[in-house]
Image 1 (cartoon, rainbow, N blue to C red):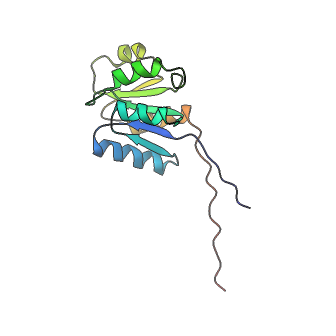
Image 2: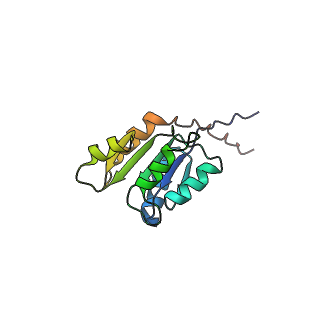
Length: 138
């Protein structure tokens, strides 16, 4: 009987296909399950459908619904308000914005990958994936 280990996924909210895929790849390589959303509205739909990530990586500058509006609506919803966020953008005063949005952390663009992974690891259990047993040739 094999054991399966699960951890809550990470939700990446990013409008840029390249950045979204890069973050998804990086986090997947580190062993995390990743769900993506193309903007704040897409992320809210997924949360309202029952997704409960360990953390949300949130781009602040997106079309349709930006990170600011997403966070405002998230904080008004008792079912998802406690899910921590890591915000990222290229801003002059990131600490002030992070404090205003009650973010767990702020990561400056371009990303310091080690810093990003350290913040994610502080909020998400890294899954323990058992290695498959190798069949020996007879």
